[in-house]
Image 1 (cartoon, helix red, strand yellow):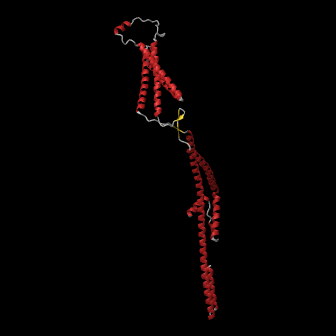
Image 2 (cartoon, one colour):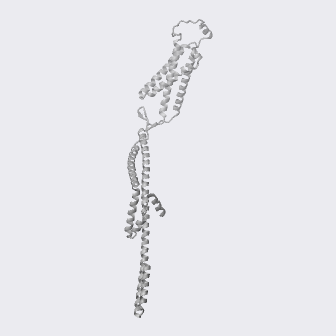
Image 3 (cartoon, one colour):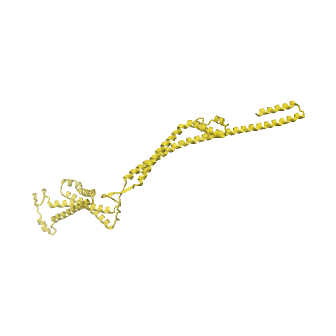
Amino acid sequence: MSALATKETAAAGPTVHLEFIQNQAGLPEAEGLAAVDSYHRAVFMHHHARDFERFQQQARIHSDRLAHLEGRLGEINAKLAGQEKLVAVKIDGEPDVQPSAPWNIWDRAMFGAALAGVLALLVFGVLNISFNLLESGLVTFVETPIRAYFWAALLPVGALAVKVGWDFLQSRRKREVYLWCCLTLGILGVLIWMSAYATVYPTLSKSTSEQIEALSVFNNSAARPGTTASGVKWTDVAIVASQATAEIFLSAVLGIYMTMIYMRHRPVRLAENPVFRQLDQERRSLEENVERERIAMGEAKGGENRLENQLSALVSYAKSLFQHEAALRRDQLHQKRLLLDQISEQLRNQLQTMQSMQNGGLPQIERGGSVMVDREHVNNGK
C-alpha cells in the first residue's frame, strides 16, 4: 500500500494527507471516514477532473454514435432479409426459372453433328475460295498466297455476323422468321449451286475421243454469249456465289440450331441481385463503423474506469490510514486510562495506610513524605 501511495503521490501530487487524517482521528469512526472520503475525493478530482470529464463525454458521444449506427444496421439487416442474393436472368423477356431438360443421346448426337457441319463448311469454304483465287492467275495472289486466305476469311466472319444478328433479336416470333429466312437462303444457294454444277459438267458420258474433238486451239478473245465482260461464264459466277451464300447461311443456321439445343439443356442462369449487393456493401460499411465506435467507446470507458479505480484505491488507502491512526489513538487512551487506574489504586492504598498509621500514632512527617513520593510517581506517570 505504501508503494501505491508513493505512485499516486508521484502521479497526482500529495494525494494522501496524513496530517489531515491524524487531525480527524479523534472523531467518531463514521464521521471520520466520511470526512476522509470527501476530502481525498476532492483532492483527486482537483488533479483529474478534466480527464475524468473528457472520458465521460467521449464515452457519451461514442455511445450515441453507436446507437445510431446499430439502428441503421438493424434496418439494413431487415431489408436484406427480404432480398434474394441471386435472381433469375430474363430470357426472351421472361425470368429464367424453368428447370432444364436433361441431356439425351439424340440431342448430344445432333449437337455434335451440327458442330462438325459448321467446322466443315467454314474450313472447306475458306479453302475453296482461296484455291479459286490462287488458280485465277492474278499476280497479287500468286506472289503472296496468304492474301487469298485473308480474302477467304470473310466467309466465316459473315456466318458469325448472321448468327449474331439472330442473338440480338428478343422476340421469339422475330427469331423464328429470321431463322427460316437464313435457312431459305442457304437451301436456295445449294439449289443454285447444284443447277450450275449440272450445267458445267454435263459430259460425264462422253468418250475421250469426243472430248478431244471438242477442244479448240484457237482462243476467241471476243465476248461470247453467256459470259461476263471479262469473259467469265455466268455459270461459274453462279457456282461461286451460290456456294459462298450456302456456306455462310447454312453455317449460321447450324450455329443457331446448336444454340437452341443448348438453351434446352443449359442450367438455370442466376445473376447477383443489384439491390442486395448495394445493401450488403452498406451493411459491411456500417459494421466497420460500429466496430470502430465500439473500440473508441471502450477506450473512453477504460480511461474512466481507470480513474475511478485510482480514486477508489486512494480513498481506501486513506481510510485504512485513518483507521490505523484511530486505533493508535484508542490504544494510547487505553494505556493512559490503565495508568491512571493504577495510580488511583496506589493513592487509595496509601491513603488507607496513612489513616491506619494516624490511628497508630506514627509521625506525620513520614506520612507527608510518603504522600509526596506518590505525587511524584503520579507526575512521572502523566
